[in-house]
Length: 207
Image 1 (cartoon, one colour):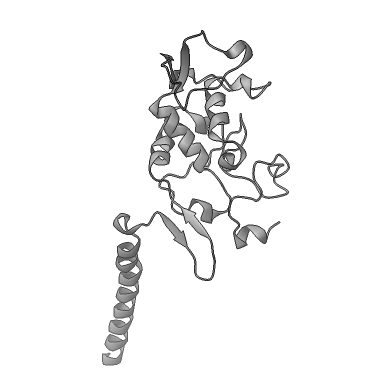
Image 2: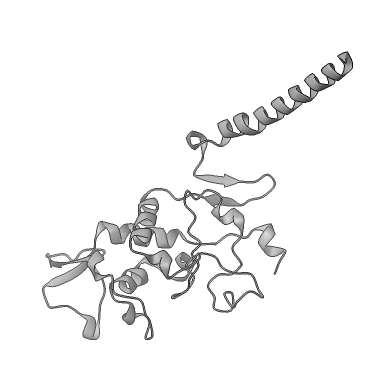
């Protein structure tokens, strides 16, 4: 009985130590107060960034505007759709791409194109115009106008640096300009942050 009691004590002590290491120590290292804005891995020159600054606010606008209802953020691997052929990305998305995101927005419906790499495809000027009036950039689109994210203001002596450059039938009356609101600026900052401009070993293995 004594040997059984000693064995039982050893087992309990081992389990307690293991659970403490797993839950307490790991939580202390990875808790919210210790998360960095980027992470790299030993032996790799790869850095995955977190949402921060204006882009973090833009992520909230993205959700508020319902963008996730029509767009995904997950470039699929070859053989599971034509995402790469459509040039929505140069590689498939993998779990590490989302490592530091507070809220991962994968989406499950594609009324519009995948946006996980939209920041590499379009600059801010294009994105502003597309949000204001999608038909300018895309002849065939089901995307609604988000013109309420912009302001029509009287033109000063010097035009605003971020005023939309509109032409033809889309120009506005003389003496006025269209400028993005703070929400539009944040949303575009977030869209530009969606850029898989780095390669990862786990994405290369399945090409």
